[in-house]
Image (cartoon, rainbow, N blue to C red; front, side):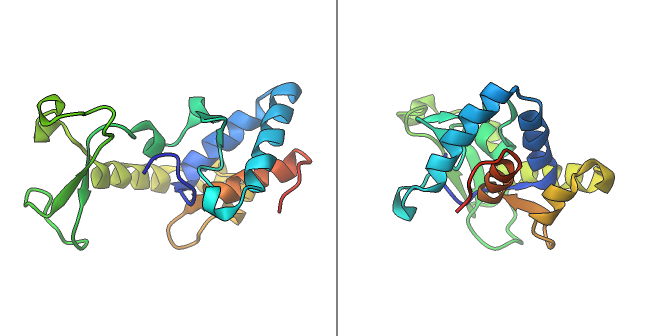
Length: 166
């Protein structure tokens, strides 16, 4: 589940990445632009996260919440939207490298509820004034859920920096 292509983030998270990139020096930007352009050209079946370069996160200081919680035990709905998370209609997503046996797994009460985390992010998104989201981010966002594809964010940053975009 981690570092895969096709991830989306809320506008507020995309804006954070955008501001971080804009604040980098010319040399750092150029190195990232060259790396991201090479990832953009990878064959579809080989694609991982658009910001993963040489098996390292190139946006680590501003990585989205979904990236920050990877490897932790995540509680996910396994049914429809109306599933009560206190019922057994949930699944656990975790990194086998972190939890090699059931004895190392924390109690269920310590699992992160991914739906609740996304709800909190949605609230943060709604509370963020539109004036704090750049027009470029708004233009690449999905209108229905205020989410941005990481591939589209990468392409925006490449264009702004004179890099080539497929």
